[in-house]
Structure formats: structure tokens, C-alpha cells
Image (cartoon, rainbow, N blue to C red; front, top):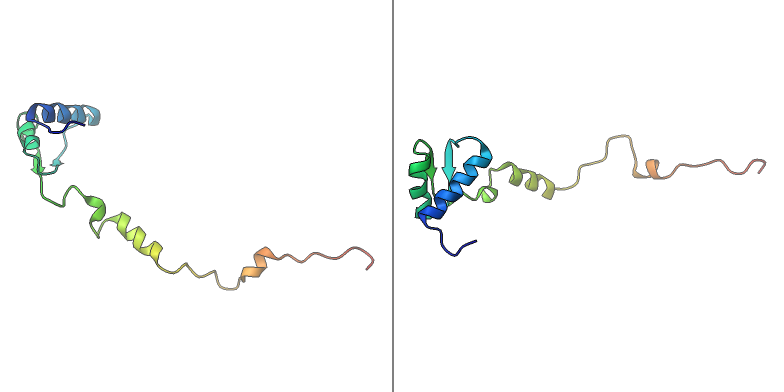
Length: 100
């Protein structure tokens, strides 16, 4: 990483990302660093650029699928199926030695 990213470095970074993806994205979501906007204009002028505060942090949004899975895992464990007891699977009685 470098301490600051100017427009030239951001352009190089975005060009490398587009080359890896093999296509131009529909929307570009970045932080509020101004050099990303300056680098986007010559490379992909038709792409919408969103640089709002919370857009780049998807895991913290409460409506994301990851958070929904976490919420269900915090609840009580599911009940065992009806008609089975916890002992029935672990304890299998065996017949004693023959002749006793």
C-alpha cells in the first residue's frame, strides 16, 4: 500500500481491476477519495460512481444475507425430531452372553 493515492495511481488500479474482471462494471462503489472519481472519468465515463459513506461496507448493513444468517444462529438450537429421544441413538442394548 502507498500512503496516498493520486489520480494516476488510481487509474492504474482501476484499469488492473477491469482487466481482471474482463468487463466494465455497471456501478463503481468507492470510499470518498477524490482520485477515484478523477480516474474513473477517462476510463469508464458511462459507469455510475457511488461514493457515499456506508455503501462500501456491506457486512454492517442489517439487511444483508450474512447478518440474517448470524441472527438465526444466535437463537436457541432446533428441537430434535418428534418421537426420538436423545438416548435412543447413543444407547443400543445388546444381548448378554449366551447361556446366562
